[in-house]
Image (cartoon, rainbow, N blue to C red; front, side, top):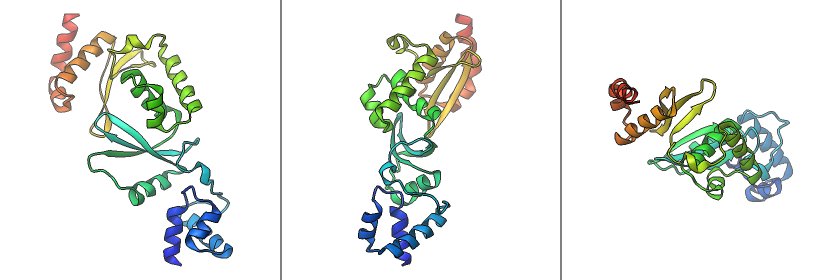
Length: 229
């Protein structure tokens, strides 16, 4: 029965219904209920928790997502109802690529908008491609994109093509240069005006975003930029 419990645990957050799990593991009603309660305890869930197979793997409010990144590209490869289930899926069930970086994040509006902003406002990718990457329903994507446009006060996005990796930090009205480097977002400073941020961005691209080289030269580089303005 222990082996069946392990199999049941693997199937708990799958899209299989109760009937399908019973068939797959050859369980009667009593055996199913017993394994169900045992697995809930091991997963740290209350006994009152109800499986919702049709929602597993898809975006739902308060879910978590597994993000795969390679260089500047990303893809949400799965949504999970809890952080623990996402960790289990990532560590136990997936064949990971050594060339990629994997993260688990909560699927809140802030995290999803950061991904959409990166794809739509900086990379200029189309809606269909972004929806596929983020695995979001259309209505949710449209809602988040509308917030992004409102916050940035964008009316003609084509004018922002030269502003890649530059974000306006609204609380201070400064401009931050930010890029995903080696598995995490790295900030390269806050600047009083957009022109300075653009010059910094251009320099960083010329050194291939080498953070060590930037740290050694940033005072000199920023000083030269300011003197030219």
